[in-house]
Image (cartoon, rainbow, N blue to C red; front, side, top):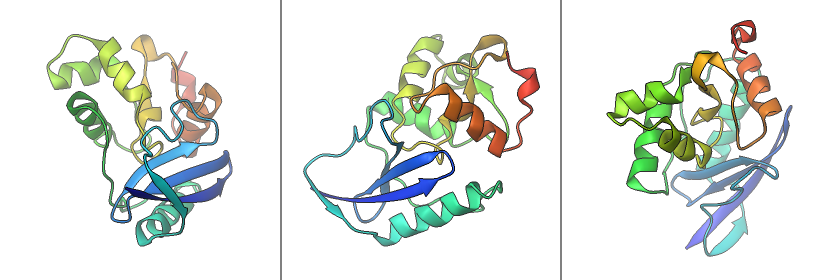
Length: 164
């Protein structure tokens, strides 16, 4: 399978994008945990239409505005991971939710299982895993680094004073 790769220079550092030509399959900060985890086979550096659209989305986002579109995405993961990642897409811009809240929405009792799936989200920012916080409004792990999680919430105008 051929994967198309592109780069985006953001205010928070270099971001790498990957597509299967039809859909975005990966978006990672440089050196992020699980970096390029969904890329298999041959790679080609090329801006496909979906990668160009993703860069447009990122331009709007990093201009501190809520994009009014989402590029075509395709999840590559387990059925449970896909359920969690689809739930992440429902978190409104500038809002947060806890791991346990997601677990309850999915009808399971394990916030830890949700946390593991959230941590392996291959499409950062657009699939907003940075909006998931721990119990009692605690900032918890982010594969791109806690500093980036905080910065992304700030971009969205989230009131960080309520976080611990």
